[in-house]
Amino acid sequence: MAQDPQVPDFKNSPMILKKDGSLGKLEKQTSEIKHKAKAMGYGGTSTYLNFTDPASPVKVNKDVVFIVKLNDAETDPESVFYLTKVQHGSKSRSVDLVNTSAFAAYGAGGKSTKKDYAKLDYEKVAPGVYKIIPKDLEPHMEYAFVSVAQSTSGSNSIVYLFGTN
Image 1 (cartoon, rainbow, N blue to C red):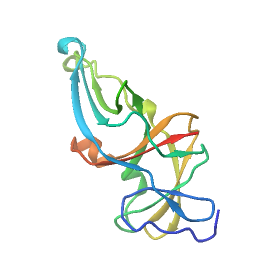
Image 2: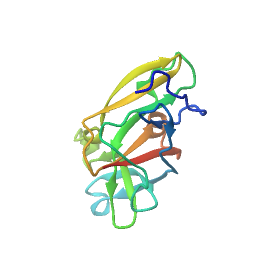
Image 3: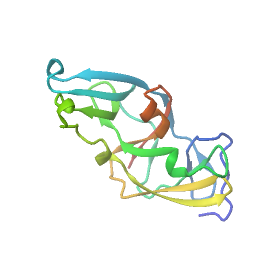
């Protein structure tokens, strides 16, 4: 890696950090939150982000490194984004936010969506600027950087997507 990587112009917008220190853009989509009842509600419910287009035009190697500039130097990068796998449908893609069981009221809970999360390491570059280093990305898979605030508030926001070679 170059000694002095470029810093993104915009806050909370992860970018690809190329080997020469320059930056590359990720696919950027405004997500649409959808809810689906399974088996007329008896099978539980699912809340997910839906994306148009069947695949991301951005492809990277599995050893990719990203860089992000946060709102301020005191922000913990782990509290801003998480990286998760993207599921593919016939004409769209999605990311699960919440899956609940029909028996949640009886303590049965639901299926965890964290199983699809990628592990991330962070390296501080400058105050409020971090390299994001994903661990064990799978080949030929799509991933999305999702805002932690979005997944807890249920609001629409921008999601950054990419696929691996």
